[in-house]
Image 1: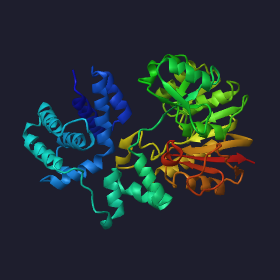
Image 2: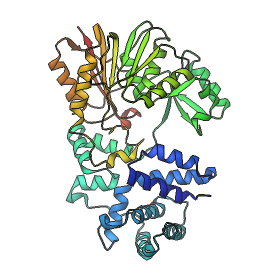
Image 3: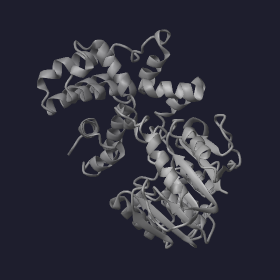
Image 4: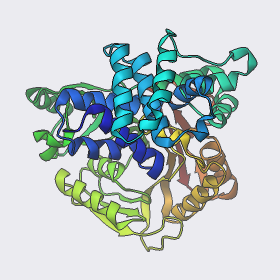
Length: 442
């Protein structure tokens, strides 16, 4: 049977070498591992712990290594990160066990020549009660980068865009576990009824602060195994996306275009808000992802959704919509705590993406009826992809006007922004980082 440490190592190597998505990688590994619940939990903790603290761990390796980190074999480097993480973050693992098991992991993966090197760095680090950090007086960006394991370009972007206080809040949120949110399928049940049904399955559920149909779940286990999931009583969707759909506010009988729809969460929520009356055209670039939309719609009992495989920037259709949702591909800086590997991408697309997004927005705008509503949204925190695209659109498309966003009851803005824009932040709103802008065709 595979051990937790070996599973974490295998997963981290896939992320390093194949640029694999962390959530998909770990799910596949755990499902095929044969490990018991305790070992699976440890594997997940080690896997995500190393990803979330990679720059901090590498800084401490660099301080003690006899060569630059870039010259250390990738496999050995991953093993060192796992060892340091266990020593400094896992109180339940004795230091001696962390060192010995890491050296054993080194041998098991055929790095026998590196065992002395690994042992020496781990034992030297174990003598320190805490991991080392650079001097903040010599550079705040460098200090934040190592402390929160976030590359300096992202830190500079956030400090310039949102200020130091929000940047610290965003950085602190990166290591937090995001809430598991679901949207109640109001065609089949109510929030109160679903809470009681989930309780029978040992799942704790409570209503979110801003959306009465949004539930926060705990103690779920594998959510796809729940009877209520198979009955189509809910679908998984962060509160930010649910807020986005409520701002679009589709009504029963509307025609709705979701131009970048897969895997379908917003399409499903719109269909439920429409009481499954009207028509939704759900588009995506990949047929394989549209299968997720169709299968999800079937599970939820939604019959008004039609799918089409097309490039959102060049889509051609005679479909004219009362409401168009343009949730574009983005750099993902708002969902780093869900996919910690995103922060380490060599090219986040911060330069190229805004123009691609704008082309999609322009094309989407052509399908809005007179008097109809258009929402442009992203799951990132980057003004070039968010506010600047929204402002440019208004400037260049005089047939549209800004439409004030009415905030959910109890919600306050985290930054100063236009009345037709809303930036959601994890440390303020307990949602994914998200941007929403609202327009109406004159």
